[in-house]
Length: 272
Image 1 (tube, rainbow, N blue to C red):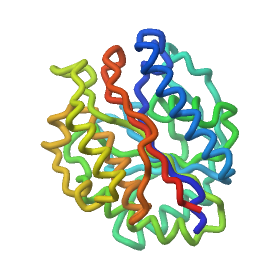
Image 2: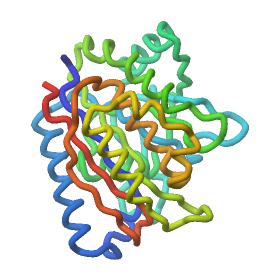
Image 3: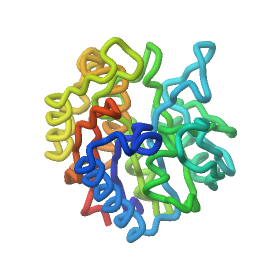
Image 4: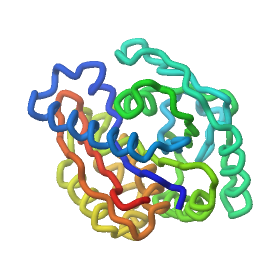
């Protein structure tokens, strides 16, 4: 199997931009969690990272939005946000792998859109700043529309993961898959600041118990009830589809009120 590592992590901008606002014990727990995932990633030594992430109006607006979009660039630059406290970087891409993913998906019922010039914001750069601080590993970003209706359903994202799995397993590259986003948060909406701990714990229990079909059964309404940003978990559901029967372990969970986000990290231990 050439998927050599897999994990998922929240990407709230506050962890970089206003880390000092979090209670010290929560910040310490999450820092240890990111260290664990970074150590796992470095030990696996992938050739390329397939990053399952979210669009935040960085590349698209209402004139054109696709369900899924893959980055085919030779390199990618970010972050867009000058206040994020993450240094701007240019990250190498892997256009050959991106093209093969695109062709495989087209041949199996998923017509992804694609960009040769994809802008990266906090959704990508926050996790990478912790997991690959040198920004020197090749990256193929795969973005999910979590912003405007119609959106891909959880079932569709799970199915995409299952379609990707055999192609990634047969690839000659050593591939790490990282999903980012979530957990419960409602950025800029009526319930901004509210964290739904019950939702978060149930979702984390389902994914760490390997109850993959239950993840695919989430409706838009159920995800939105925990906040608009919770739709970013579609990327985690896709990851679960790729990993199939393998069960990740919970690395950390903290409901960080100053960041207005339920922060979660998971890691798949038995990939190789």
